[in-house]
Image (cartoon, rainbow, N blue to C red):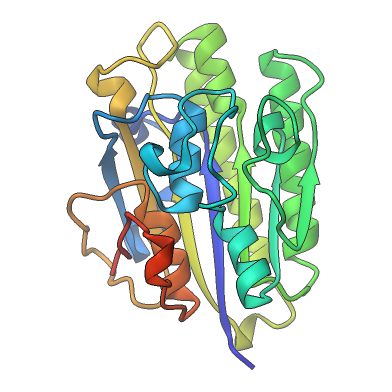
Length: 279
């Protein structure tokens, strides 16, 4: 039986320049065993969640997937599907996606981004408040821990955490934002522990990728071209990723390309992926 597995955790709106100031031991461990490196969002891509996450999970640019804002109307995701949908439909692999932002997971606001993974869980935030989004992320984490820790066969999974971004929008990038980043790191740690503690862990080889979509201005908000907004990052570790070797010129589209490589899949040229694997 093939032992290769991939987990992608998307943490929305985490500024790279603040990470060294914060207590993020689980991201630090990923950086130590693999890498953590910047991604500069290209000039054609709005520094908004919709376009950036679509590029992360499809492996193609905005010109192809057609998601230009936080409404997904007019997208071309039928031609350029997310990796959980493509792997399930074309390779009969088991995939999983969970999170709480509507257009990523539901047929609302032009979505969903994740069209047809093998298993999908949507857990709504009760309101657009920091407290409600923290509770949402807590529920998302518990669901991810439950599913990933169950030993169920899952070749590729995506977990979305959105509270950091909501805090940045509402309160700026001050102490509350710092606490939200540290809380997200603790949730990441729980998810990684669930993977490590799987009953079948000794027979599995996991590639773990953690990625953010964009940054924030000091006062909160994004969508512009300032360095704080257009600088994202990727952290990854696993087979084929040499510890301490930092890839250069990383792009969001490289995430999906790396998912396929980690699973031993050679992309069909007709997919016209824009990304390349990390290693």
